[in-house]
Length: 257
Image (cartoon, rainbow, N blue to C red; front, side, top):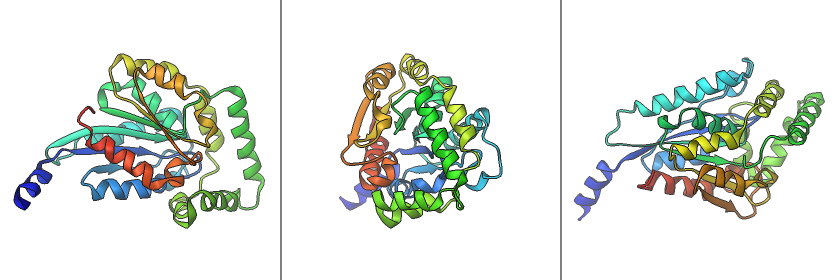
């Protein structure tokens, strides 16, 4: 029996995940999920967006961000692991908006889409709030680093703060990133996703205001799944790391992707 179980595990398809981070942070914000997915035998790509992480010296440009996601998706699709499983694109906040835009442009290149903490259209008011926050942070001596770290410790403890900070704290590119998001139309992107029949799963924290249009987003995506994580805030993967890791493991094991 043990031998047959091992053989089954060896031949089980390995999902290929591309995890796209949010504003101010980097690839390391996905540490809890990347570890859980790899431990389960899945492959993970965690690119840094322009102006973030190892690329903090670069300017943020929308097309450069699209190219970054495309490169990570293509790299995942080229995997030599056998048998190959689905390519699943996951994005949170800024990364979620960019992932929806990418999926709307190239739905045929991925097998599943999981947007997190981005179920609200980038209205003029919302964009203005983010611009105001960013400008305030930039005027602080540490550009708001202590504030952000304290927030992450509050919602997810020391491990969340370390994951948020480990790859570097990026404020310089934030205004350009917010301006780029303001040009996007996620509802139109999701309608193209629905037309292509691409499975979509929205994940939001219960306490996150960026979920106010989750029903509309899910409807645009066409029969999309929705999960609300109780007690979790905006950076849902750090506020509830085990829950989000479990959700991604479920996605990786789902035969329908």
